[in-house]
Image (cartoon, rainbow, N blue to C red; front, side):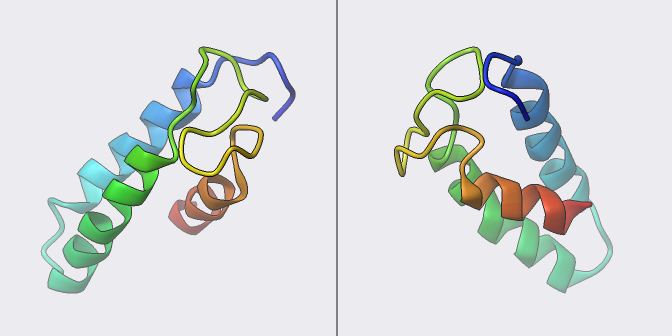
Length: 74
């Protein structure tokens, strides 16, 4: 993702996927989603645009944690 793109679509998309997983019939899937949601909430963007510091780790957003979660969610 390039610096200066809107951060909200990616961030809200990840939260949406986690919410969808919470309605799964699998207890493991639900537990995984509930485990990752607080991490994603802590690592939120500090600006409307990408490339600005992550609220939790200070890396340019999307930080490595968000990139890893997004990849895992596919």
